[in-house]
Length: 176
Image (cartoon, rainbow, N blue to C red; front, side, top):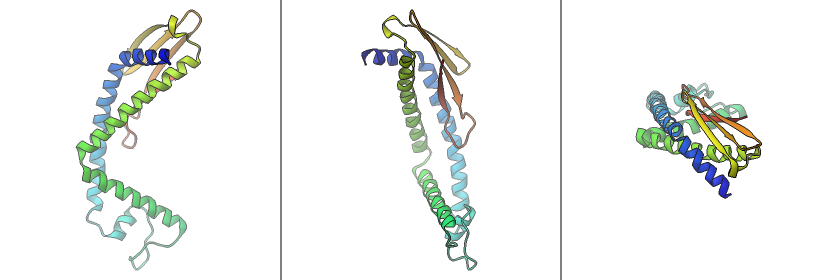
């Protein structure tokens, strides 16, 4: 455990730039995402009950007083209900809260990823007491090579979802 905590600290120091880039990209994404959410909010806030749900794909009765009573339509209704609740909640809480929540999630992703990374490195058979670390950046991606007398492991990051409105930007790690 001592060795893995030490390796986590070493990799955390080596990846400080990577973490800062992740946070900056997350802030950019959260601002863009919030604007998209607010735009959807503006479309639905003045609509009547049935019109909101119809806009989200729920079938409405001909008299426009209720939803069509089928199982698949009820599932669409519950999904739409959750979507609307999230939409109103996010906008009511505001941009700053949305950005802070995204930053918190990005920090947690970063820390969880470090723990997984160290675990995967040790499974490759690296002996921590004899370990040498060489790191470098290729654009916003990081490559770390860890080696001891017998084994060598390369850990690479891949930047994901940079331009997605649905998923926040994040890193994936590949261990060779």
